Amino acid sequence: MLRASLISLSESRTLRALAEKSSIGQRMSGRFVAGTQVEDALRAATVLNQAGLSVSLDNLGENVSTAEEARHSAQLYDRLLSEISARGLNANVSLKLTHMGIDVDPQLAYSNVVGLVEKAAAMTPKNFVRVDMEGSPYTQRTLDIVHQLHRQAGSGACVGAVIQSYMRRSEDDVAKLLQDGIRIRLCKGAYNEPAEIAYQKKSEVDSNYVRLMRMLLKSGIYHGLATHDEKIIREAQAFASRENISRDAFEFQMLYGIRRDLQQSLLREGWRMRVYVPFGTEWYPYLMRRLAERPANLLFVARNLLRK
Image 1 (cartoon, rainbow, N blue to C red):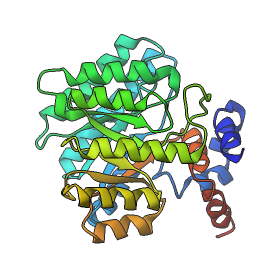
Image 2 (tube, rainbow, N blue to C red; image 1 turned 90 degrees about the horizontal axis):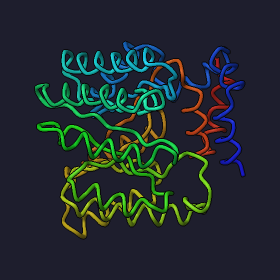
Image 3 (cartoon, rainbow, N blue to C red; image 1 turned 90 degrees about the vertical axis):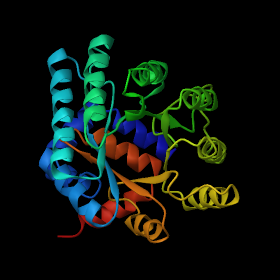
């Protein structure tokens, strides 16, 4: 019930407008969002790199309504890739197709993203563009574009997809992505989907996550396991050990500001660890979906609001 309520609140334009302009809302976002500007994100990436963590940078935003907004979003990512290279950061980028203009013109979105993937492929060393997964109306279109981008000559290894374990279709989607050799970030999912297309019980979502995780680890392709669930993390470690899968053959991924203790613990144990670093002014939907994924964060946020 709480999870569904938080997801519903994430879709409220009125609450979003109030939160993004209020001082209290900005304080709430401070722990989980690196800042509002590119420089804020780069500064956070530098600090994380110094601690031994790799990074994925995400400019928050979705569902742009004009071609100009979409091109502006792509230009910002182009700048991010340039800055990552110039500063020698261990970082890649993550983007949403609705931020690139897929609702305005699918060809525009594709053009925007292919330019970024080509830039990542031309960098030394090569970089990587992760295409995020959004709500179910975009699932097939997103996967189609990722497959198409992967077929671009010289760019295949520089683009990847995201799969959500709460979607009933995900096992088939994973099989098709693996067949093409596409890198996957596996997460649980944070949108409000109906029972006919998505598992509703946590036990079912977790079980599917573990099933998909095993498929990924046995594929021989470098994937990311995005989770803060210690039980699932230990399951992945045990599976890797049983199957003689090297600790550098995949990576764990966690969100900026969440379970920093566990991030450091995994790093000390010799596992690869990447932190997903969001930034930008449009942080409200992101924050609410993160709270929905882990309602225990509500208590954490409340405590921080009481601090000076």
